[in-house]
Image 1 (spheres, helix red, strand yellow):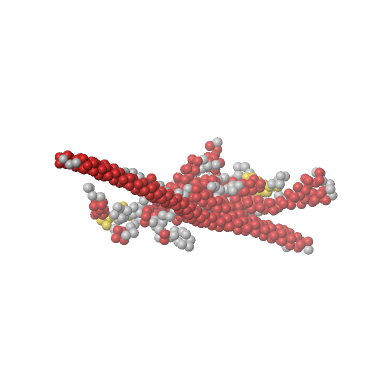
Image 2 (cartoon, one colour; image 1 turned 90 degrees about the horizontal axis):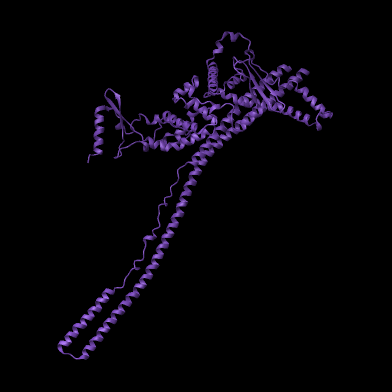
Length: 374
Length: 223
């Protein structure tokens, strides 16, 4: 079973990434055979759906009007007539819902570990090159006797036809679930979180947008100081025997202040588990940096570290804890660290470059002066 | 316009409408999901916020430290006993003097009466002291009760003020959080509703355009 899931996962990743690359690279425009070929991307999705429905409608109406129904009190005939009357609107609603779901596969942060059949279906619906009728793809909507409808996708990229039932889809949507998980924009949300933590200087936020300004810095109360109130600097070597002071931060205090907010953010994410899995697969699993994430969403993925939707949902407590821990690590490494690492002194006299050895001796002497032996 | 041409226009309008409608639906679901996440965040923040400290919680009942300073006040009997002893010694000395000088028995009787008077004076003094002490004890007890009552009242007032403080702080904080996040949730739900409206409008427009085009096509064909 696990092997089967892994094989499926690999296939999904491969197909999703292949389609993504194909769309981004414009490769089809340089395929002269494709350019010369006659493409048919008009599927006439609803054509077959309502074929013969006019005749059926007339037959039912006549039977009711003439009282020649086969069922007592024309119950069946009236029900079928109502089904036919409401079907066109239902078809359009259904198609709109299906397209809204498939559209997610086009998102920048789309998790490529999801079922690639949805990505292929989206290519068909949006008439992307390479997914036309002449390439062997087809899509149709069928009316079912119980009043529901189904959309069916077929073609070379499908192992078996992809079928979505209207009633089932509606039920899932009403339960706030989705066929295709949207990946939350973790980076945007973490940036907002950073300004909510209450660890930055008051003037670090743009009053209009609430976003951090380029001059944003951590509040002085989180900077480590000596017993006499002076700053407790760390000396770093900058080459050529020179050194300079950088601020040291009370990271425990920062995390104590930040944790309740981070926990709340995680709780928010966990309210939709499929989105949690997407966020894990795209951002957290690989322990990548923001820069690497940009590359990840282009053409990479976290591979074996990713969670398979079918396997992990509903999320176990262990998965939730792992997610929370990785979320905190990611936040610390990608957002907080830039404000706590290599920060120059705010006192201009202390920010000057000095002779490294001299500086270290001076610092040691200052320590001894503050902490006499007796 | 032929039926075929009209069909193409109608199909185009329908597809266009479907695309707009599905994009709006997608946006609506995205906003709804954000609102749900925000709601879960709000609930978590509310459930796990720090407890507000009651600054009066450490106040203790100090009434046990109060006592009636007159409760153990003793009568100065030692001084009285000394006075009686001195009277007896003085009487004995006087009797010795009388005996050695050969004074009459009448003088001794007068002396004995004087000694008795002196002892009576001592007894009266003790009674007076006891009465005074009793009075002070009662006064002390009254003062003690007043102080104890004042202390209890102070404690009760402190409890009430403390509770008022806690309630006020909690209320303020809850309202701030509720207002901020509720505003955000409300805005997201509003955006979701607007997107849903756009989806419906796009769909209605598409159907209407398709119907009009088809109607025109059919009419032209019949004409």
